[in-house]
Amino acid sequence: MYQTQNLFFTFSPLSGTSLQNRIHKRSSFLKRIISHIAKTKMRNNDHIPVHHVTGPNPKPQQLKRHHTVRYYVHRVHESLTTRVSKIICATFLGLLAIVGLITFILWLSLRPHRPRFHIHEFNLPGLTQESGFQNAVITFHVSARNSNQNIGVYYESMGVAVYYRDQKIGTSPLLYPFYQQPKNTTEVDGDLSGATLTVSSQRWSEFESDRTDGSVVFRLELTSVIRFKISTWDSKRHTMHANCDVGVGPDGSLLTNFKDKRCPVYFS
Image: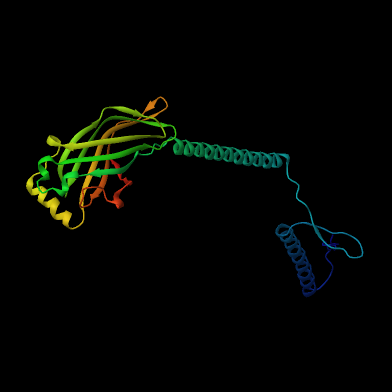
């Protein structure tokens, strides 16, 4: 608190100069008081209030702000909302991962594998005869393997064709419709001759020319319309092709490097 001086004065028989000096001094004093009060208020507004502690080593301490109940309720609500959101997201992602894993396992176990075909025998017995084209016969033996664990295969029909230099020289139906059990092998034997095998003298001469080089190469193609059976569900129809490259030696028998060879399979 400031001790103010008596600002009131009485007129006394002073000279004009003395009176003016007294008024000027008191006006300067009032200005200093007002300036000091204004500066004190500005400092109080710009600084955090401190608490002065008495003692041998007094240190000013900042006063703790006290929040309202509404503030704490809001903070708790935000915390609970965040936790619930995290739990929901984690649960959803976990379920999604489990469903994806189950779907992937089912896809692996139920995904059908193509039948596997292997060529075991292919013979052209009359190749050593110059006029063998008149009684030409081709015989073959192929195996068809269903390697699926729980999936069967319906063969609606099966046909065979023989190609020489990409020219068809014979064709014939092979098997009637049948069902192949899982993990089962079907032996396919057949022959082409007479009306099912078209070999002219010119073509036979080409055979003889290749024979002198050591081998005659043919392509045996098996074609069938198949369906996969998974429990009580049947797949759509697929046209399957199995292409077996075969080569016979000078005696007309299958060469060793072609024996038991796997035939590529594709669908169209």
